[in-house]
Image (cartoon, rainbow, N blue to C red; front, side, top):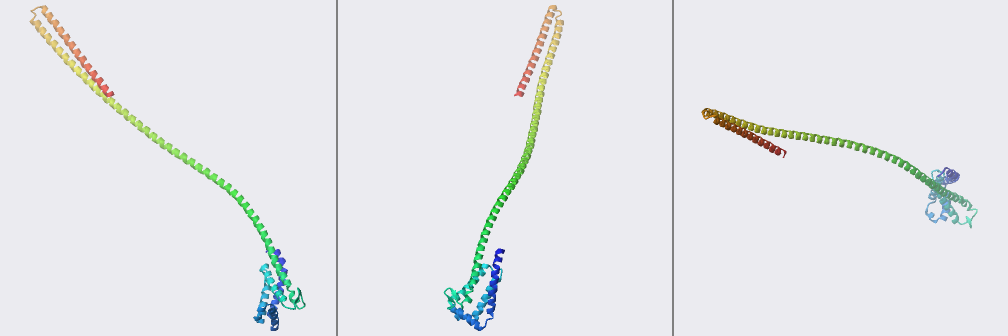
Length: 323
């Protein structure tokens, strides 16, 4: 309820509430005759009240009027509720006026019924309070609904703006995260590439070292084999040469010995055949020279054969080594 509606309804509620509260407090002090008069008038209009004692009826009416007046004067009581209570109270009075004979002439109150018929203004006040409350509440409801719609529109606009801002911030955050993630991936890839390159370089160096060591071993092995073959061939050639030398020396010795023996025999023959003449001596000398020449040729041929045999042996050994 707005302040304007409260101020607009305040005079009506105060005056009416004060009047009804005063009436209720007055009836609290009503004597027995007044109670009987009021009870008789009410039981004439409402026969069910005949069984209620007059004093009890008057006290109930006084309590009702007091409560109604207090409700009209209390600002916290809604106007719709207070108007409904006032309309019900005034409707009961008007019904009693209408049902009581002699109080109206058609729709017009008589002189006797004017005192009660004038309470029709209470019905008007109660109805006005209810209508004003309903209309004002409807207007307020429309205003509230309009305000709610405007607030909802404003909320939607604010939500859209916040969503745009949040989307921009989220996109910025996602871009920053993507950049950071990309940088981290690039760093990780570079580190992995460096590590792999180092590992590959180490493996290549190890393989190169192994290859060099293998080559060195092969060279050493080949050198050793060549050296052994050279030593072996040298030994064979030296042995062959020594054998050929020994053979040549032995042949030379044999030839020398043969020459010496021939000379001696020639000398002996010469000495012994000195007497046989010079021709026998010359023939003996010629035969001796022929024998020496044949022995020398035999020695040379034996040496050449030994050398040829040694060279063939060396060639055969070289072919075996190369194979």
